[in-house]
Image (cartoon, rainbow, N blue to C red; front, top):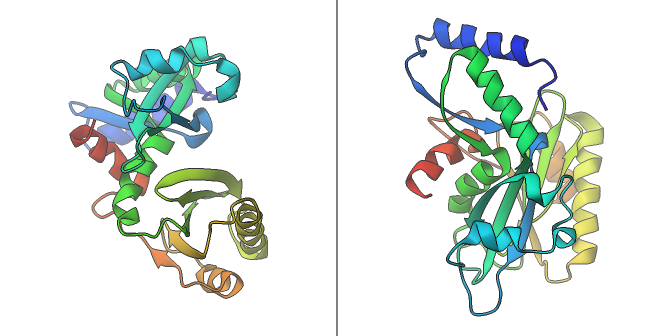
Length: 237
């Protein structure tokens, strides 16, 4: 939930005026903390239900363990390629989505699409998972100002995420412990691949600690995988 609706809206509006974008349609991603994601599996023999959104709402809410009632969730569903019947579900509570819509309304923006960051990031990441062994654990680090987001993917399916330190020894140890924890729970993992969403000053320390060479992903001409995924969603709904 945005803590200060009007100041954030004013800032967005000022930036749009500065860049002469007030007549443009806006696509935006919710902050990662504004949504929760789960991997769901459709019934055997049913790759995609005729109405996947209703199928999700028919699930037992307890099985999803969302931090808000399923009845008030705004849902985004993305099939997981080559997985048969699995899909990635990202959901936000209706009050949170409505609050962010108000922020963009206060900014005077013509909001066309508001999507969960997790769905956008995964859509952009899929291209980097082609040809990856089902036994390789892919670790994506997305650096931020005050923290780094960590996502683990195996066999094309998101498995685990958490927020870790922004930099320094604490970041390296957080990532190493997370990888070690996951490997203890998944004996199928045979190797680790480390992807960086942007250059990181601790890349060499991470490489030494994990024993793998990190790869920096390019999202050009976009600023991040999340923004790239917004564009992917437009052509791959």
